[in-house]
Length: 322
Image (cartoon, rainbow, N blue to C red; front, top):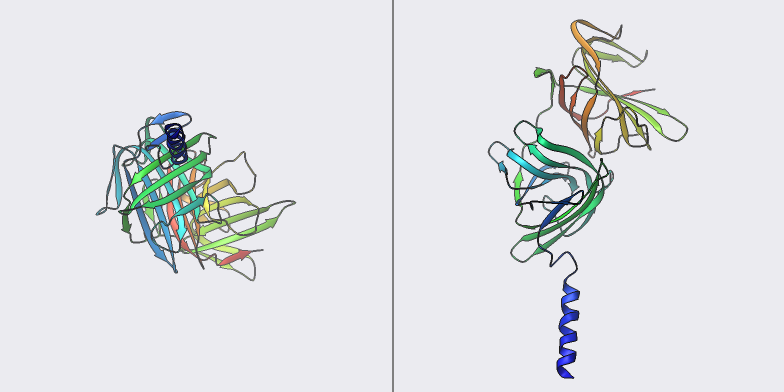
């Protein structure tokens, strides 16, 4: 009888510990397919107004990180998570993907070439739509990270990483604007126009270069310069942090449904000068951070003729267009 009860106890203890998190070995599954497990975790952070903007990357075999150049190299799989934290390291707990929470955005890249910033043959990169990541810290400063997400293509991804996290304090990148590989002066001011619709808000934000001024009394722009415009549908009247992908067919809350680029644009006529352009932007992404008193716009897009539109703007939205 004693042996019988001992056997029951052993079985119960084993079942108690096999909870799918602590016992299960590292794994990575995407859309039901098992992939190579992640082999490294790189955390980069920037201190900003008493908070830390943190980027956590789980990388698979084939991808490496060089802290001297602050860049990834190689081709493989990666999950990237953007967080706003009160500390520069991850603490134990669960982080839910939400535009107003600690985990504000993320993406999954499969068979992605980090040097060209393009997917390799058969690869892709998708924004994460919902889900969470859970962090535990084991003895010896070893992290256990479980994740369970759904991406913008409605594919499920889940996995577990166990190991160290490489932690780097990086310098905030400078503001810049680039069109078709050519550098232009960085944007110096942002304007916002908000219209209340029946259920949501139409929010237009325009980044303006030197050479363009705004007459508040008349409510008009003047001068010639460069612009990038983002048109959102939002549930609130102000921008919400997160990653946005252009979707001209979608006007649900928290979507970027339209974007435009103007080079050497004459704001009095709304037409470009000779040699300039004024194009819709057909695809790409925008990462928006909302800091204590400022916004950060980081965008990587393409216009209909295949020319790249990239840039970064950090500052307040100074012009409120009524």
